[in-house]
Structure formats: C-alpha cells, structure tokens
Length: 104
Image (cartoon, rainbow, N blue to C red; front, top):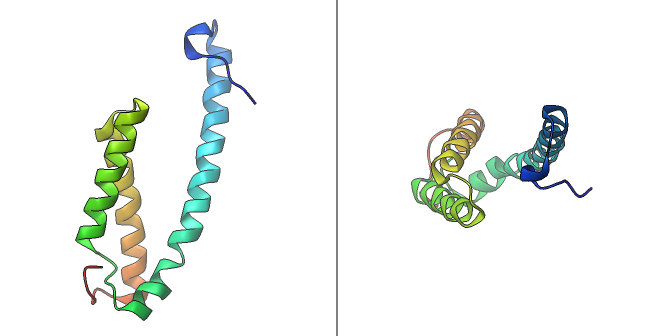
C-alpha cells in the first residue's frame, strides 16, 4: 500500500494509521532478522567466534549510522536501537555458547 506523504496528512487518525502500518512492517522485518540471529550461536560455536565480537559490532553500528544518515534518520537513534538489539542477541548467545572465542 502506498502511504500519503506525511506533510499531506490532515488528521491524527490518518497519521496514526500510517504509523501503525509502518510499525507492523518493522515488526515483521525484525522478526525476520531475529530468525537469522537465532542461527548465529551454532555457526559461531562451530567457527570459534565469540558471542561478543567487538569488531563486528562496530562495523554493524557504523553501517547502520551511515545508512540512517543517508535515509534522513537520526544516526544516533539508529545506533541506539541497534545497540539494544545487539546486546540482547549477545546475551542470548552467551547463555548458549559462553563467552570464549575469537573476535570474528
């Protein structure tokens, strides 16, 4: 569905409808992303990669910041959101595979 441009919206009801649609799309994409991150512990264990890989974290956050800036999204907001997701995934991975491994 094509949404109207934000500046053309005339009521809070219409604005909220658009935001709710976007939220649904974001949740779907985040669920898809989680499916991929759920695969990481097995692969990291097999490849000897630590749950917390600082170089990878910085690369992801830099990429997210760059993409956010290019799309007109506050890069600090994007980095904060991704930091929360990354830390949540790392905590789950560490419960499964521990804290040992290389920074891969």
